[in-house]
Structure formats: structure tokens, C-alpha cells
Image 1 (cartoon, helix red, strand yellow):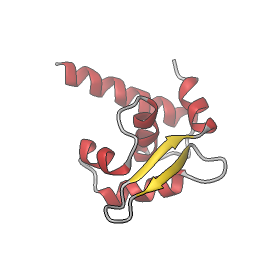
Image 2: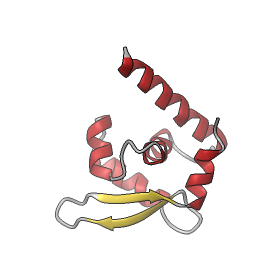
Image 3: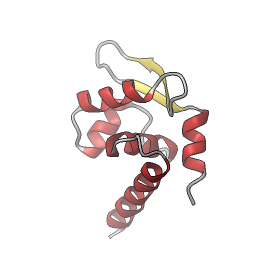
Length: 99
């Protein structure tokens, strides 16, 4: 039961992020939400937790990082391709304005 509530709350937060920034895909908004909520701050753990191919998560992270983007890449592990991320000022603002 607790997992159902957590999942419903998370999905509602993801949809609220997408409503504020309609350019974000569901996966992109999920990554931003997971970083903001402290659920996951790297690509490999996000992919494993949500059962998504790591390559898809990496692609979204690359598209979400850069100037005026919601994510910043902190570092990459060469061997595993694990990418550590954090929210930028834009990402923080996007999430903090959601009730």
C-alpha cells in the first residue's frame, strides 16, 4: 500500500513538472523529479529503480543538460557510464513552484 501511495505521489509530481514545462518528456520530467526528491542522483540507479534501459536515461540526461537546462552533469564514470547529476537553478525553480 505504501508503495502505491509513493508511486502515485511521484507520478503526480512528474505530471505537474510536465505541465509547467511542456517540452519535457515523461522520462525527462521523471529524472528531474527523482533528483529533486532525492530518489536518485545518477543515471544507473534511476534506470535500475524504474526498470528503464540505462542508454535511454543517458540520452535524456544529455538532452536535459547544458545552458539554461534543468540538469547539470557533475561527473561521468568511464567504465560504467554512470552519470551523476544535480539540478540547476532552472531545475530547482521548476520543482519548487509545484505545490
